[in-house]
Image 1 (tube, one colour):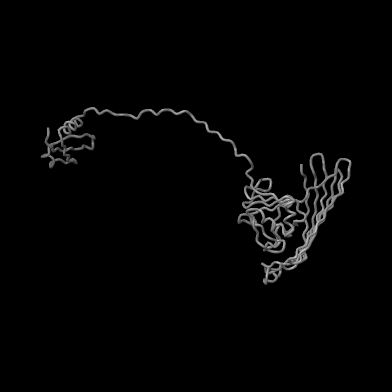
Image 2: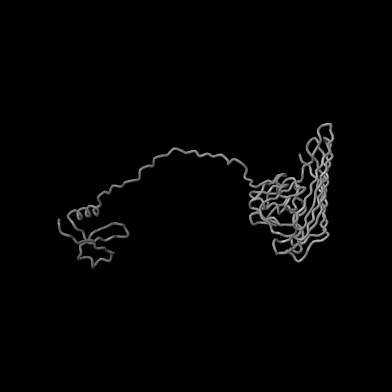
Length: 312
């Protein structure tokens, strides 16, 4: 059969069956019809066989090949998740030569900057976050800024001359340090109490002084300890003073940048069977502190602190 054949395929939607009808009957049918032209000698017999209900073979997907189980195991990353830097006593001695502002010397730590204010009242900033977003601990006690303009930040109650070490944590905050600050933690430590050897008496002390030509700044610090093998009594004090800051060249002086302050602390410690008991008191007095970035200065500002703690 080499001629093209015309035929019509009618689809019965009710029974999903296909039947054929001659072309001349298309006009009388009410069923939807489609006209198909078949060409070639093999197409027509194949279509007839399909429409006649010839069995059609079906092929199913083959079952998948089971793969062996793979066990994946890993170990926790070594090291601590806490990131930060510690300023040791030796490094603090090098930095305190250039400033009496504890917050200002922290700017040597990567990621730490500061907003300049008074002579010893710089506001620390860790990776762009400051104020209530930071936790400042002084000998384990969290201290917040005073005054609406933050003219009494926590670090203004410390003096680099008497600080033993500073920890700056710029990442995840340990729960032991508070753990609720999104910016970071600054932890200032005084020198720990010293005790004599068994059956001996310890009497020791140290003193320091400095002078800076800019603003004629000067000051000094004194620490004295008397201790037995069970009790220790330590006094620490410092004083610092400076005039107005002088700019380089012909810039002249910066008004309201002078300052003066004194700090005193007394620490009594006792070694007991299950730990260490400490009683500490402090007194701070600021006769005056200029603030070139404010509409006011600070004069005659006293403050005191009292601390009792038991370290197991």
